[in-house]
Image (cartoon, rainbow, N blue to C red; front, side, top):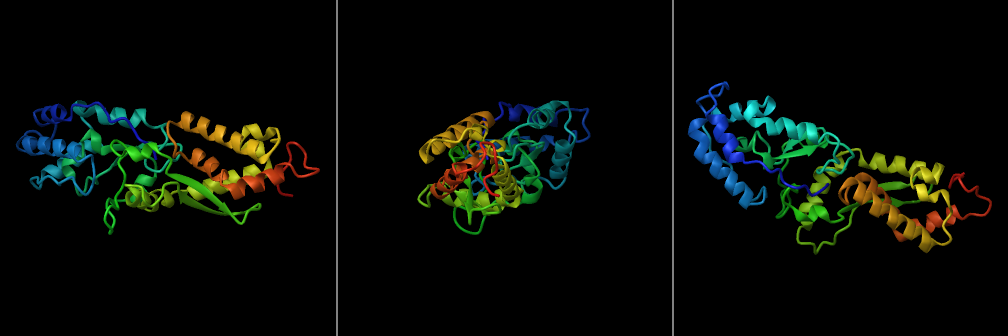
Length: 289
């Protein structure tokens, strides 16, 4: 989950060039749709990609399949689609926070919003969470919707963190929200967490991280090769680690940052310090026998 800079593409010019390109199979059948789709692009941007506000563009029955086909195999005038796929393969997934992407996700599903099948602002790098999400866009309650990495500024805030309870070698692991219910976008954030993030392997990732932490602390946090002098120093070490991870991954909601943020819960800090500083524990030894 990351806020992204929107792609700098002149979509209206690209679509007009596509519609007028005699070398593509869709010529000349897209030409009649140029005004409606260009207007659709304008209203999508004005609505900030909000699924509640963006209106579907009415198209002739044959146009939608043609646009979806051009998305699957972009011609030269849509080279930006190929470029977006290639250039984002190594990014943190802005939809779920995993440490890779590799696909392009239609924020508004191309099956339901065919006019935006090749619209750059509707194409978001994503990982396998794209497949697991399916065509979900809106929830049943007011405000419940998928967040948009190009428009929703809240994605720059810290939204999610691990939660560890029943501490020990195998704790109870869950995913918590870091924003209060009074947050103006709480319903959307909570829906996005349920519908996308919780359907990934994030809890297994947290559990593996905890296992490494207990087996050899510096496998999870390099600075823990040295035992902190106090629980407050441990907290400072964890805060510094979170800041570095945020910077490394370009946002606050990648899985590594979310894992370490969960370690900052007071009951976890107290447990970790007691184990790190336990009498007789070797400096690089396990936390749990």
